[in-house]
Image 1 (cartoon, rainbow, N blue to C red):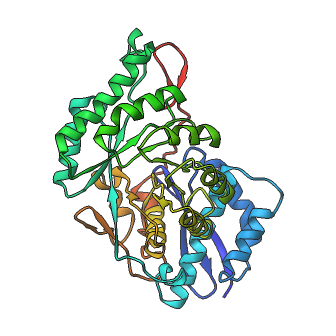
Image 2 (cartoon, rainbow, N blue to C red; image 1 turned 120 degrees about the vertical axis):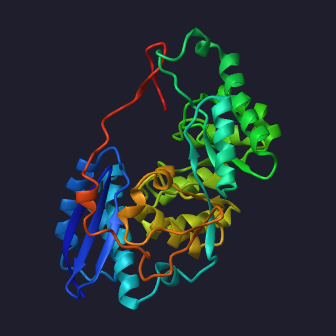
Image 3 (cartoon, helix red, strand yellow; image 1 turned 30 degrees about the vertical axis):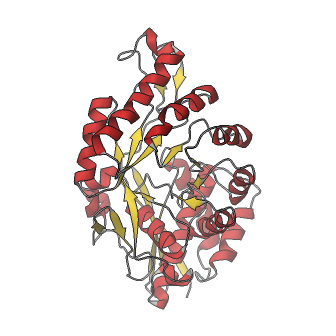
Length: 380
């Protein structure tokens, strides 16, 4: 079998690929650098010159060749490699008529616990939304702790340290009171706190027993992340922006996280994500795969989740649940009382709808960052 063509399939705010072969088997993949799809498309065109004509079964060899060629690294390059790697695994599974998880060692589970995000920003609204999520059958929800810092909605009090810490802690308290004990709260800080705020906030919300606090600070300094992790009983989760397995090893060797968040569409695909799972297992750390993208990303995550022993919970994009994006694939993913069922079809278990680009005209996201009430740049 030989690869004959790499086709790019834009749809909405996503970029998928189809990898065609001379035996009629087609694999699908998805790009992770959602803010720079045009740049990633350029890298894919470059990599197409290598991958066309190759045997799709030699997945690790191709990964090493693409990763080591031309010396350069970066999120756009790794996102392109991710899409190709996922498509290669999809082809191999289809060729052998088995799910990818069988090629990775077989099933560890039939379904994986999942959670949606709550895009509300006041304590009252967040508590109500968490209760709605619980009533839908989920047992966990992701809370957007950062909130809206724009000057149109904020005032001078946002510059007061105590106010910021207390206001964010109040959101967690309201959500815990709304849902009771039998529900997990995931605190998505989105890199928006400095170390002092992060430690104070974590201490303030410890009584509400969140499942974890995600990216309390920008994740660029392992030592500082480890310091925060050492000063709270709440587990720290990070890793969604990492683009090589060494970043995970460096973080874990410093005890900087109890949960890691590899992104199969940004790290380089299924191949390195499986290696991260093994690294994490040696540190008694679980995975919470990052998944803010489309259905190919979700399906690839589920194949990984099925084949590793140390997955905790799987992020599931809320816009898939609330909108029409389920029709991007021919058979919708199955939810079972807050769990995603692992697809058992060959490859990654899904197929893109034939008319996906017509149904979802391309709409790349624009460059955007939040300008806070005082005129400074602020993480969202």
